Amino acid sequence: MRNASDIIRTVSRHTLAYMLFSISEMFRNYDEFDPMDLLIVHAILNANVINVMNDPSLDERFSSIHTVEPDTIKQGVSRAALSRFLRLPLETVRRRVAGLKRRKVLAETKAGLIVTEQNAFKFGNNHELQKTNMLLLTKLLRDLKRAGINGPDDLSAAKLVVATKKAK
Image (tube, rainbow, N blue to C red; front, side, top):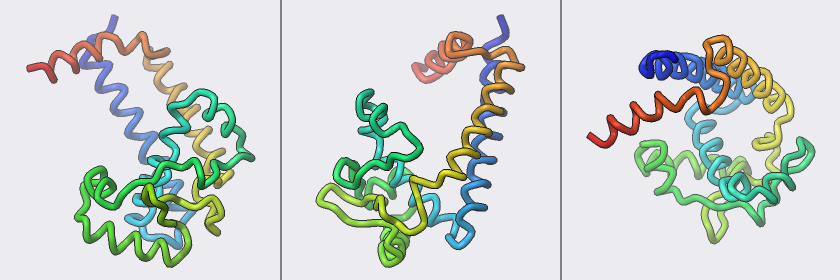
């Protein structure tokens, strides 16, 4: 078995490359948006569907590339929560959200902000970006396999090292 520190470094290197390629593709697909606005939109998108991802029946129901989560089941998020999550000043989040609402990307619900299913920019339903993500994820998994990491069981030693360091 490989050294836990080597596993952590290998996984970190490959997942960082995956994240950077993904972000680059997101910026390329939405070049009419400022990168900070894209970060905010995608943080809201993620918050909106956490309940879907955590519910196997909803996850399956909305798994098709042709199915978009309706606004009515999206979990809203507050500006303050976004500010904390992204570590951005609250005023920056407020100002950016106001601009995104004017562009009809975001809507305000009783539960908080959502990315509307009908937004004209196809946030959350960009098939080209989803297909590219599949290619990038396939590359990540192939690269990890080539590095000797075939699945979660191969990370056990690294998890133990991380847990031990957190406990200290």
